[in-house]
Structure formats: structure tokens, C-alpha cells
Image (cartoon, rainbow, N blue to C red; front, side, top):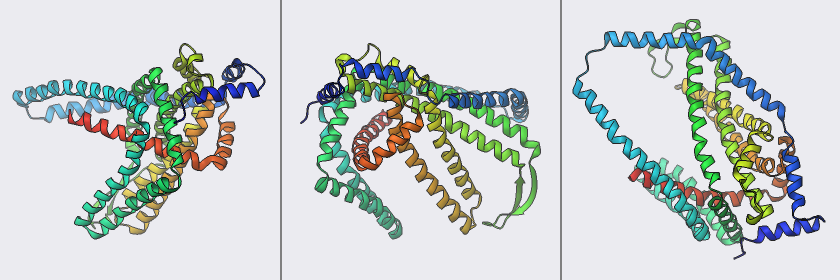
Length: 423
């Protein structure tokens, strides 16, 4: 097995061929990191947040009054609740809180333990993940066949795909497992000696929760503002034939809904990609400089770059995914609204499926592009162009490596979820 010190050797060879010492590359990276890239997209992102704040300020008061009236009416019309029922509900809540804390503790403990397992048994875990996929899908297919022949045949598709993939890797691409093992061991070492990476990932849940609460308030304010502008008229449900009320909303409401969807997905993608760029920056520093030459606070430095000089690139790449996600969500809702109309359902279903694939490809592309943003401090367009060239020359290697390492990591997530649920 090749030693994990190989990245250090590669670093020395790179600097020697470059004609400089070990600090040449570091100085070049620091110089690039001080330049703000795609700064106009930082402004656009902040303006978008400002618009959300304006909406909350203009319509938020009416929304609060609206829900206060609902609560007052509910209290006036509600029957008296038995005190024993209230006490029972409070007791259930008090008894559940310790289990939540225990579950969080088990999840954190398992995450630390899983990282140590990866570092010691990375190759074994990759093999287990590779072979367990067709086994699991095969069991599901057998179970579905006992329920319905058609469902069983459909369930055979993922079984056939995963089985063929495992056969292809074992027969023709076994050497890629060794490379994936090295990468998995390297990442485990970086995470082990730089706990700030997973701490940053955990703490990213806090701004996500705050944002979701703020977004729901703005969304509620928007719907409350437009509630008097929606016209209702009698119509016939095409699926059931029953008479019901249909609604006709102004075009501005649909534009507002699209803006809200893009806004929600955009901020969430930005938070996710800030964590990704932060982690990629730490791994890049480990690779090029070696563990002994890393800065005193690599995670903090990488996070600063992600939140400052690289933030514009993160905003731009995240917006592309957010727009596709918003369009896909609208297509899914349109499919649900046209239940009973087979032609419309098929059209919207196919369109949503196409958007899902586009979303996956953009996210995959961004995953690699943001690595260059994190390490070299390039703008998003340059990173995208370099990533496209990389995909053309080494695309298969990257995809297979991501799949092998990703499946091994997902195996730990599944086991951790089972342990947490069992507690």
C-alpha cells in the first residue's frame, strides 16, 4: 500500500520542478487568496437578503396580526382541555428531551469512531459498501416480487445496475479501489488532526435553522398579503368529478413564489458550499504543504477565505443550483395539481425528472469547481473552465472515485442512523 506521505513527496517534486522552495506555492496561494473573486455576486446575494428583509418589514406586521386573530378565535371557540391531558403532554416532552440529547451524543461518538475505522480499514469498508448495494437491492426486489410482479420487475433495475457496476469494478477497474482507499485514508487523517472541519459542518446547522425560520415568516407574510387578491370560482375536479372551488391568483404572486423558492434554496446551498470550500481548503493545505507545514489554524483560515475572498464564487455557483431546484419544485407541484390528467402528469413528471438530472450534474460540477476555488482562490468561471477540462481528461476516474468513497461514507451514515434510532 502506498504511504500517505506521497502527497508530501508530490509537493516537494512540484516545488523543485518549479525552481523554488517549499514556500513558493504557499506565497502564490496566499496572494491569490487576498483577491476578492466574483465580488459582484456578493452584492447581489446581499441585495436579495435585503429584499427579503424589506418584505418582512412591510408585510410582517399584518402577518402577526393575522395569526393573532386566528389564535384569539381558536381560544374563544375551543373547549376546555383536561388538565390531566396537559400534564401528560408535558411529561412526554420532559421524558423525550433526555433521549434527544443521548441521540446527539451517540451520533457524535459514532462519527468520531467511524473516522478512526476509515483510517484503519478504508479498503475493507469500500469493498463492503460496493458489494452490499446489489445485495440490499436484490432483497428488496425479491420482497417486491412477492407483492407484485410489476413492482418486482421495476425493483430489479437498481439491482441490475449495482450488480453490473460491482462486476465491472471487480473485473476491470480493481486498481481504482486502491486509489479510493488512499483518498479515504487521507481525508480521515485530515479530519482527525483538524477537528475544526467537522465542527464547522455541525455548526452550519445553526444558520440553516435561523434562515428557515426567517424564510417561513417571509413566505407567510407574502401569502397573507396576497390572500385578498386570490379569486375563487366553482370548478369540477377532473379526477373525482366532484364540484369544488378553484383559485386564480395574480401573476405577481407566482413571481413572488418563484423568488421565495430561489431564495430559500440559494441560502441553503451557500451554507453547504461554505462548509465544502472550508474543508477543501484544509485538505488542499495538507496535500501541498504536508501536515508538519500546515498553519496553526488551517480550518479558521480556510473558513475566512470562504466567507470573504471566495464568497462571491460560492454565491454564483450556489445560485445555479438554486434556480434549477426552484424550477424542479414548481414542476413537481404542477404535476400534483394536475392529478387525473394523465397527459399533463406525464409531461410535468418527465420535466421534473430532467431538472433533477440537471441539478445532479450541476452539483457534481460545482463539487469539483469549488475545490479549485478553495485551493487556488480562482474565480468561479476559471474554476468551471478548469473543471470542464478535468472532466474531459479524467472524468471517469473522478466519478468512480467519488462513488467508491461516497458509498463507504454513506455506509457509516446508515449505521449511525440505525444506532441513533435504536437508542
